[in-house]
Amino acid sequence: MFKFLLISMLLFSQVHAEEKSLAFQGEVVFVEIEGGFYGIIDQNGQKYLPSNLPDVLKQNGLKVRGTAQLKTGKMGFKQWGKMIDIIEIIYQKK
Image (cartoon, rainbow, N blue to C red; front, side):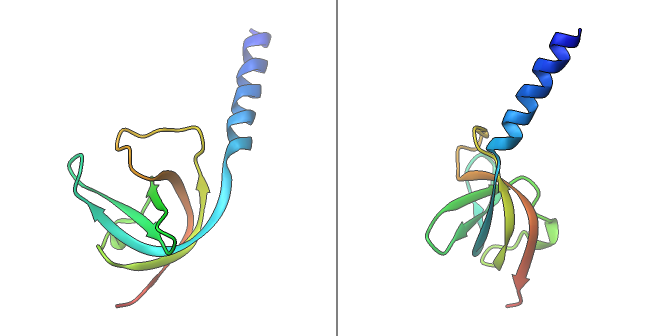
């Protein structure tokens, strides 16, 4: 039992060590594939797929900036952009 717990803790710490923080500035976009979803495209054209974009910010064309945790080594079924968890996000009123 102890060995299993120790291995699980080591694997868990390796996964979290791979996650990286990033700053972004870009635009919320509605992507019409797989039933439709919201993503963020930054100023350099990099696509991000946030797991926790607040509903109030799900507006196509909304300008945003913030920080997020990059979820490296994870693949979503949408196959669009890099998966992120938003830490902080600020929007610009239209």
